[in-house]
Image (cartoon, rainbow, N blue to C red; front, side, top):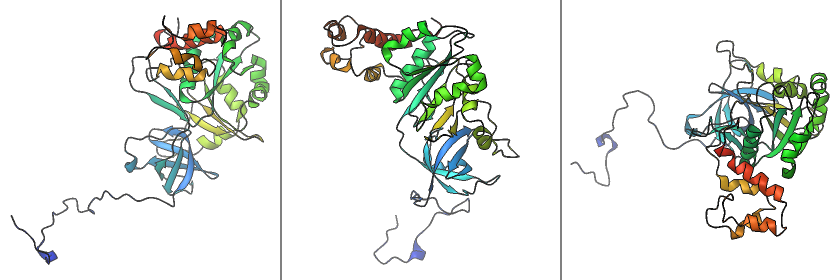
Length: 337
């Protein structure tokens, strides 16, 4: 084996030729200190529509991010062509830490979780009181996902002219969830948007609901012009940019208080395979002190749970404990049960 001394002539050192003819790869990545900040509005087949200042910019994820994917609501750093003109493309080089995450799986046996929205403040769960009938199990699952991901839930009930909301509200009364009740006429003439808007100002709100409940109609009434502005950035070759609620879409709310509305695709199921049941109790701060006497790894729905005695002593409303256990057992029930 050849050994080199201190004063080696560089010409004597063998270098491996680069067969591809390009520059040798390096592990040193650029810091992109001059990258611009942006907000991901929607994602479509690897292309991300972002808002940079007042411009809608198309972008793709940089290779150095690896498997880390950006989703709607992410705050990102971009470099490249940020002009927003047609057929230009920027690169996302950083994704900021998320404050909240709405996640779901396809079903309860699916180990692959999907992040639907990042950094949302609240989750508006839209349900019709009739035609179609309410699906309490699906709503329970959405509530569990909201509590687990750090979002505040909001119930939006439509078609109150077909059925009274009283029985439905009684089911969720102990959870102290804010709610809005609207009729079909209010949904069609835009009055429903005014009722809901009071809960949206200054917040990022993700809307979720199954098909036929009026979710997209409500969102379109809240932001009639912005959807066309964002989805109008279409590539003439690929057709990218079209949106028919097949992917989540963030839209700015035009009001004095500001805020954002995130329209999500209609859901048929809401899997909770990714949910750690131990985190759901955090949505019930009045019950948390009672868990101090629980056995290790207590599910809070077993004979030795200390919450039974805690509630019996008058420290909390029994209806709250019932609601907690109903939500905790959601993973063990099918949505149609």
